[in-house]
Length: 439
Image (cartoon, rainbow, N blue to C red; front, side, top):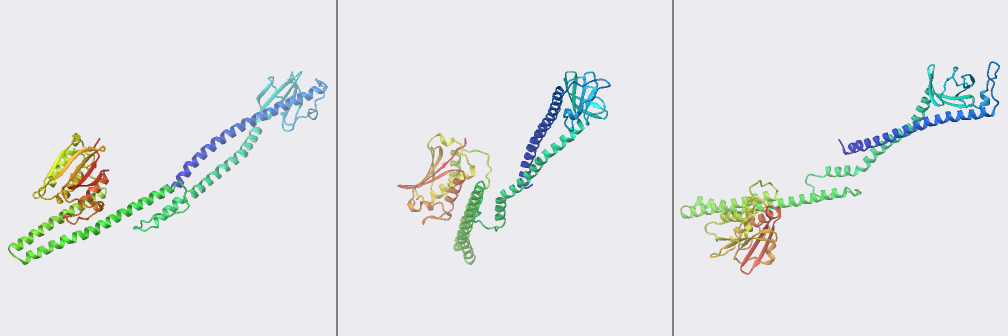
């Protein structure tokens, strides 16, 4: 069901209900007022006839009596009127009155059935005479129906007109949504340009602005993926070429030279495997893929597991310092990503730590978060290059890594609201990772 039809049904139903209630109220009140007016007409006619009778000489009764004339009494046309004595003798009767007497002894308003007709009567006694005025109820009902129909027709016409105005008004006011839909339908699949639609109402402008922000985020994502693909193709080409060359050398030589070529090919395969794993992890983190891990680990446990992964033979040792009790707090992030972030920081520090020195990993509570500080004792990084440390495949001149480790750390930090700091010291580089704790 379309939005226009749904709004029309909702608002139209409300209009019909309100107009119907108002019409019923108005017509019911009109019917009561009409009945009251007709009754007042009977009473006024009876009082008028009684007033005229008071000005005429008393009528004679008996066989020689001269009947009163309705013209003398000024009885209105259409009203049945009978003038009778208190003993029931009819002294005068209008043309609309029945042939037989009403025979009412009660004064005021009454209903009387004579033959097949029902009358609404009003009786007034003045001296020795009784004045009765009456209306036929069927004629009253016919008059009421005609008046009520005449009053209901404008209400019905106004209701139908309101529904038509509502339908066309909604069509006109919803036309900006149709323009937005048409603009989106006409775009190509790879179009990321912002929507440019003029004359939109104020309520729809945030919708288009949000849509344009979505296009902008999609553009950034596409650009990031394109850059990743280009960089990955460039970075993977070199180790693959080296592996192929070493294998060719091994095939053409024998003895120690062949074994050395195979060893070099194996080392190149290891580097390629590590680079691919880093690329897959980076794509998974930046792609917002889920890491479903319900187990919560403390900062100390994560630090020890990261050290176990990074500590390999021939690499500088890693010293762990738990500076306060905050190391027992639970981290508010998946264990896999926490270990991966710390392992990359430790491996990066090992690459820049000279032989005979150790990498330092300390854990403490700072600024409401757990702070993992990884410090090496290498040459440090020039201040103008600190901003490039987290760029993909960027390496310092003396670095032998894949150039993805710190990019992964940055992606993990952005995903889970962590802070990443690079601080040059007098004898190396200190990297601080501030992570939230589980409450």
